[in-house]
Length: 287
Image (cartoon, rainbow, N blue to C red; front, side, top):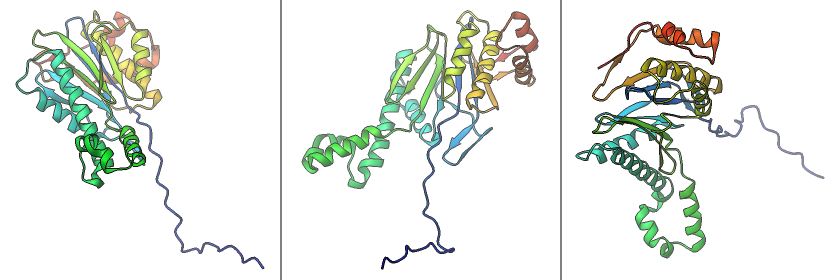
């Protein structure tokens, strides 16, 4: 006689299943203007495994005088260490684009290496240098190859969009992505990161955003690009920042963003000088 299968009693708790990681839903945009100002627009949403929330954070930190970095990541706690390291590497060095790129990529790779060390090698009390030099002697070939695969799979640092001014007052934009690769967008004049970046960049190309656009038109174009990115999941709340060399603050009308949103919903995606004048009806001050 076959015994019946055991039945789960009402008081038994079902086995917990770890939720699947959520795809990051964010966008950060930067663009260079005719007079070498830099305009940035981003959302303020944080996304994690169990959900997301808007109006949570400003996704931007400075890493040197006249240099800032925005980020897009599932785990924002991994972004600050990269920027802090970049700031440390930048100290007492010349203010050039090459130095800024070197500091950000070096900081990115160092933190990614430290992250892999902690997650994979920490249990063996080994650092990455020791594993590289003596790992094959300590572990079998199968074990060494398995650990190497785990190290290569470690990710989660996110993407960075850096912008700023060199010692010659030239404006620059570049990105740093896994595993520490950078790309300069000075010729294009704008860039975006985050899961909704493609939607944002598509609108910027459609609107004809270039380095010869005025501060006002660039700001409107970036806002319209961000509004389009919201359809791909970016947060609705908007953070705006514009900068010229030496400035740390910007001021503009609080009605600028809601006015731009109203116009976008009415006429998207066409932008004329009359539209810019309708939206930016008060001067933008950088200081």
